[in-house]
Image (cartoon, rainbow, N blue to C red; front, side):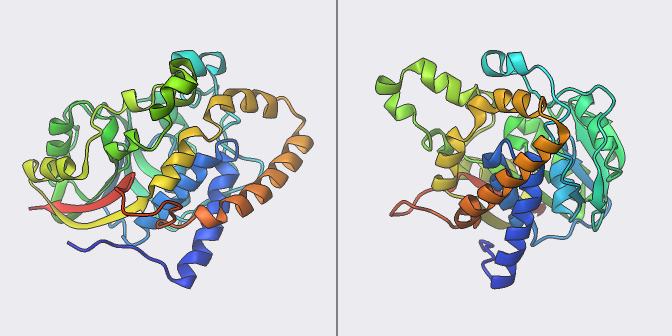
Length: 321
């Protein structure tokens, strides 16, 4: 079972261009932009042969960008948000909101399209619909049986498996809908994430400080586990590991742990109350600075610490056994 890691010069150049595309959409959460960019890099080794399904597609922006699509500089995911007063203490999802005016300005169409996208949040599916990237969108709770026939898909993609409480049913359903010889691409966080934060310093920082930084993230990942447990889950579901690609290191995770998450609602409110010209100018300067700051981090093996450690996120390529 080989580990896949691409580090060629051409891949580095492509990674830089990709990072800017993700920053354009996620500039007020740059830690998410570089994480998604690295996740996209890992997926580059694989074709999304159809029929293909994007499980937990959300607003579709990640997969759209991964497929080579791009947006005008006027667009970003923060234009159409809500619940900003409930994000910090109630852990509300600011992106689970739409007023019907959401209209991404596509400048470059994706190189390919997905057949199906699913998500539990109707507002996110409404946003995904505007991209014209999915042939069909289906509202679905991953804890339940999937509304698809056996052997429906050649490619099954999901980067949210660790959010699913009923992981046994979910993995069984993923195996059921995947055709013989087909491919399952799962990006999963590992419970090493529990160690790549500042919780060890609770005595000096306080629980309230950690709560503001954490915003209930790990508690919302009920299926978080170690590498060996994921492997056992795959085996129990009848899925065989073809390859394993670690792409997020402990350094990436430590940086992401804080990021701009605590002040993101305030930044969004401020940005969305600027004039269009001022917002555009600040966003452009912001991206230029972030592009330079994040460039060294924008490689899957980047790590500032000495010694070996478990990755924070891994891409598994699986196939029905």
